[in-house]
Picture 1 (cartoon, rainbow, N blue to C red):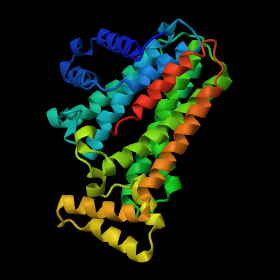
Picture 2 (picture 1 turned 135 degrees about the horizontal axis):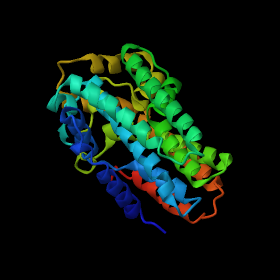
Picture 3 (picture 1 turned 180 degrees about the horizontal axis):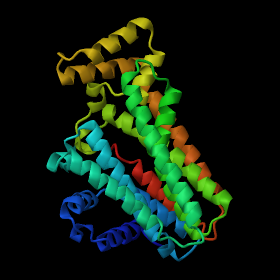
Picture 4 (picture 1 turned 90 degrees about the vertical axis):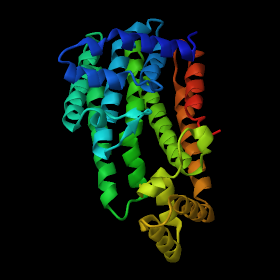
Length: 326
């Protein structure tokens, strides 16, 4: 049985073989190489290989689709950084800061095309299904990003709308990675769909946890300062739960805090935390995380595979993804 480290090593070795940084013109490909060499957990390609491995020993069938998904994921980060005017990604200047905005657009476009090139190198008999899954997912990620931008301008966003947004922006790519691996491994449509739903529930869990960590994590363990979502007024599961649950007076107090640009950052964060605690928002978020995680594991355990013991490492990997707070 492969270990988590072996799956990750296999992905990293394949990414090195791409040698993107040696291509010309360098002004196009150096930023692509810069993004791809920045590291990361390689969650999506690892999930692709694990899902394939449930059904076949030949996980080489899933390698180029796995690379395609990782390139696509990093393309979305590059363009997200540009749209958000973010300064840093993975402790390094973002592409538009190190180069410029035009470079970020064009190199990002090249990454999307490269992702399709590697997806098209899959076995011909499964290529139509893989491309349908990949294209639908790419469109849904864009839809999720648009909803996220729309929500910035809307005073009222429901929790259901928020969950739909994070399903599109975050969860569908995890789900598609698992479904892609399953297709490469020769899984039945039923098993492919179960793994897709496993990924959706896992993605929802992960994003709600991310919202929770931004407010309640230990910065020394989490690796970055908390409260960024509060300071930016970002609509998160926690904020929307608080606004839905609060009475008129508390809602006014919360909005006044979020809109006050003169209050010191630490004071604003701690004051919002007090309101969240008063409304039981942390417990509600944790309950939602637990519900979606249990759904995820339930879908995984329903999968019927010739190598059922390999579901264990997929479950362990999922648990490891969510152990980021302590």
